[in-house]
Length: 267
Image (tube, rainbow, N blue to C red; front, side, top):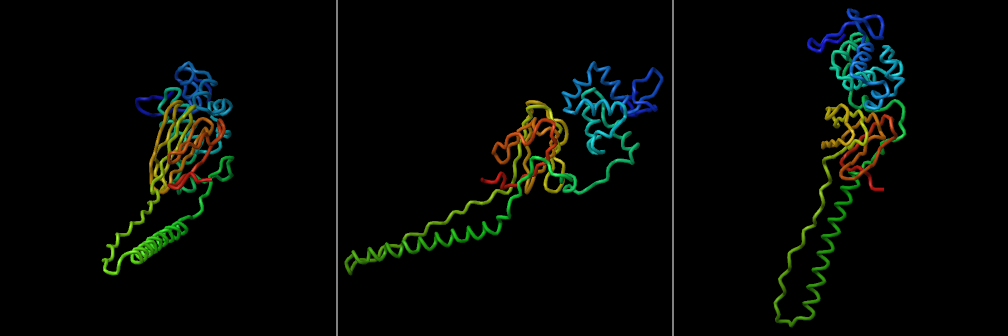
């Protein structure tokens, strides 16, 4: 059984329920906590968005359906929290039994999928050089138009005025206002159904991780880029820099997204 006060976990060779005095594995602990909470596997699946077959396998200490250690840890955390357990002792026990905790990896490697998903990130072209050239051309065009306009205006006045008339005072040129490009990116996620969510900035710093409940809204602002890993693509709506992007995927679909200051692109 799990002793919450001390944060320790004992084991047996079976993931099924145990009698008093016996010890429990990780799966057995999760199953016992679920039963004591009065929850069925179906209810846990609805609250965590984890398939029932995966939950049943985890309760038997079979992690082959989880898709790897990263997702296994996330499933254990989600099931434990729904059942009212502290997940950290279970995660520590899992890491000890499977070669230790994961080593730090670059943020790009953590967020780049090995195989493409249905909703793929749109790669923005590099507009920096084009924008600089365009702004310079706009500024030159404005200055030339102002200069030509003033010359034509003074020529007309000189032709119409008497010879003794004094030349009109030359008005000041209007300043050319150039809009500054956006430097920050703002991403808002609203959950229609519960979904696991991980959010990081361009340097890999974690901005949020955990389950976002139905009706809950979270928002982040960062420089350069915000990367999201969504466990239920059909259960959330994403808004980027004020534009509603809708749901990025289907119910139960794992989605990886990345947005910058210039997103979403104008179509």
